[in-house]
Length: 263
Image (tube, rainbow, N blue to C red; front, side, top):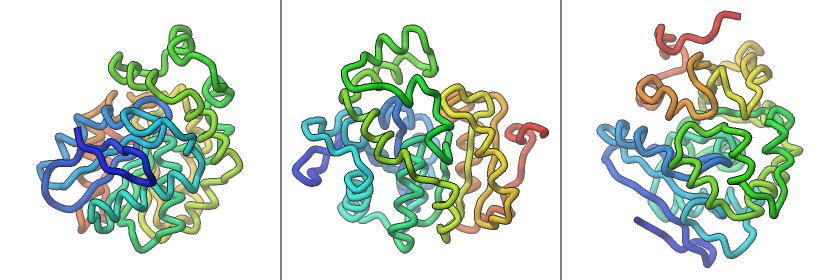
């Protein structure tokens, strides 16, 4: 276990491998741990980093640092502390929101973004999560709603600070991420599970049909909310192609195993 002090709090992270950097940012349900298999695969050619956001996993839960400025500051200081130069940022759900927001504010510090399970607006999020309140029990919620494919991920999600989900959702609730994406210069690959039961991907699916040359959407038909777990080999292959320095969105081939659902 590795940790760094940021703003007076402990931030847990893991890093290994050599090569061009990839930074993984988790979402509302879980911690850095669901990236492990993906990190192992990518570390052959890349230096991979994953951290626990404030309130999640093994990072500090003592303060309610769950607003946009706190999370953007956390990512920026972490990148500086680790000496990471222009990483590919792979963000999932909340992590995708943070990655896109970060690219708007710090365009010179980022290489590319893979936005996984991305809601463009908060209304795309299942109301069971959207209305989750401080003091509610995640364990009780998961007993009758089962959006998590793995017991270890579920256990990590249950360790989340009481108010982290509620406050982080509210912090970004009025942000239109389609508008944000229009003001990003770097390439953005949006990857969603077409069977996602946490995010309604219908609005996200059509984003690259609107003249955005730096944005591409790929839907994985066999995946739900955690495509990096549901279809790990396919997800890793797609990320490997995207992370290649010479890759462009045009050069990404829609191979049969991840071809989007016919509309």
